[in-house]
Length: 127
Image (tube, rainbow, N blue to C red; front, side, top):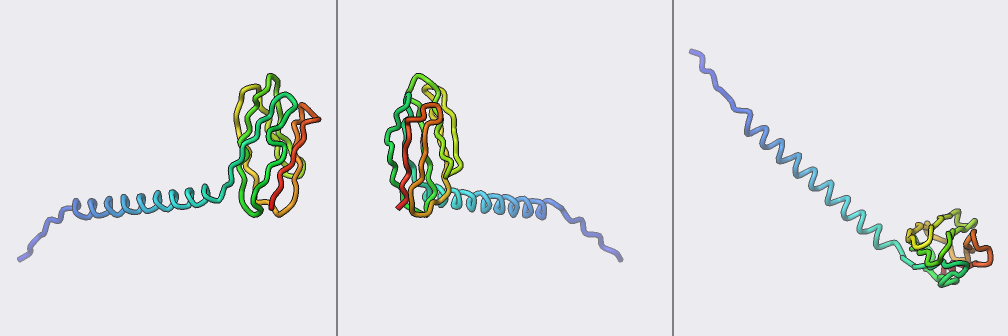
C-alpha cells in the first residue's frame, strides 16, 4: 500500500521570506552604524566668501580628521573656493551655499583663495 503525503510549500516559503527580511534589516542596520561612525569623524567648519573677503581667513582644524568646509557666498558676484595644495575648487553663484570635503590632513598649513578675487586669501591650519 502506498501512501502519498501532500506537502505544502507555504511554511518553507514563509521561513525563506522571514530569513530574507532579517538579512535585509541586518544589512540596513550595518550601513546605518557605518554611516554614523563616518559622520562623527568629520569636523565641520563654515567659510563665508563675499566680494573679495573671506570670513574667517584662518581656519584651525585637528590633524588626521576629515573636514567638511561649508561655503556660503554672501557677495553680489561669483566666488570660488580654491586650494592648489588640497586639490579642491568650488564655484558659487551669489547667495549659494555648498561644501567641500577634505581628506584627513597632516599637521601643517594649507592655503586657499577666491579665484575670482585674487586678494582674498586664507589658510587652513591642521594641528
